[in-house]
Image (cartoon, rainbow, N blue to C red; front, top):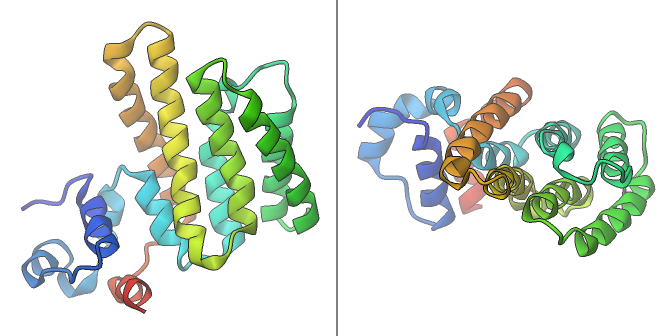
Length: 205
């Protein structure tokens, strides 16, 4: 079976289920435990962030997540500065220019935004993506993978919802997939590919 854009996602699903990776799959898709080919082919930013979050330094993961969330910040209310303030503060935290307390403050703002952003699904999902970046910065290590994944998932849903709201329902999945591919490239530019041994040890440890 050739490597596809969803091969890494398949590996993630196997590991999440707590199953052993079939030897035949490893030989075919990750010879010698090398994941770089399927990492490069992946168009799933949720899995890329989830895997990388387990090993990369937290600020680097948060920075990548912020870049993903920034792709949908335009879907929030243009006259409301709060979503951009949240994202800017979290980005500053990733650069070492803001404290945990600063992020805690904007996380409260993000939670307020989540309660308010219900007039459109695209705005609500975009706010969720931004809010998850603040949560990711402060999250317990055990949950950083899922928190990072949520940023990308919400961003993709925001793009699909915006297409539906614009009356292009048939194109919503196309636009979502195109957006996933863009975000995947952003993540790969910033985050290294983990080794298979690292993933297996982390999921089974």
